[in-house]
Length: 435
Image 1 (cartoon, rainbow, N blue to C red):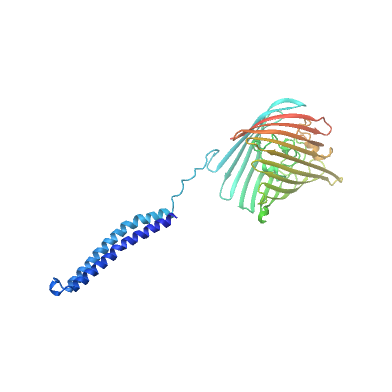
Image 2: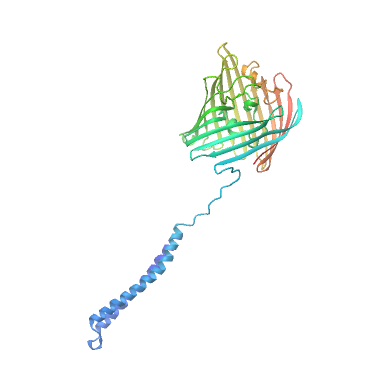
């Protein structure tokens, strides 16, 4: 609209400037006609002289008109240029918070608190210090690193390289990563890192407890991950494929579950899955995965198959998480088969900075399962959320209060039933933060 007005003003100015030229020409012609009409006795000059004077006069008038046009056209052109190309907004300053280097960004997570259960002494807790780093090496290549300092049951603090991934992203349909990663088993393990501030609850569902802390699923992997979208319109279909060393099988007090440097056999773990994020329900995700691995140390070989399914709905107000897991351990040497089933449901709703939540979880494995028997022996203080054997189930009820933008206070009550042991009750308080 501004351009139109300026153009109208410019056109008007041009018309005004043309008017003197027309008037001048008309005046000269009129004078010539009058001079020509006068008697020869009143003409002091010849016809040639009159014509020459008229031409000179016309040249002078045109020169003056041109000068006026030049003076008026300069500001008019400038106004058009300003209207056509408005001044760009001031550049947005990129935040320098957490910038370690021009390419490197780092976020720190931490948590502390206290815990009291009916079967163990009350204690204050140092949870973990999590250094989460990410760097972009080029338009398509990036690096993710995560280093942890966690407290062990013997009161020592151990460093741990949780993740180290080099990622190449071609486009929305293909991204590949290689290194130490969280396995794409279920939703929770890839959606939440070790930073407790990101989780609503004080702990992970026990089916997704980390395997280096007594968990039973291979939550960490060293290998290759590939993922991307599948052209599917509004369905929002995505694919995931993983290949890795798999996990070591043995006494968790002496064996590191993730095979970081040396695979115990030539067989690799293979994992694949699909999930959807419908355009019409952007807060919803549903999917499944199937993983196969061969465990060979110690004792007879065990074929492990893990199938998962999830349906989650998350937005700024609601969080509804549902996941189910089925695990099959097969010993071909003696024909034994061990089946395990598990699930959890977690629901929460935010009321401003306060979020109450409820979770129920269930895990049921045969008491003689050869893999879970080993897992249950690590720092076994029954029944805790990181000691698995038999059936484990119970509800959790809690409240999360974000008293600042980057810190949250959590209070959680647990009631845990474990087959063969008395039901216990526990209360955990946690302050989780990020900076």
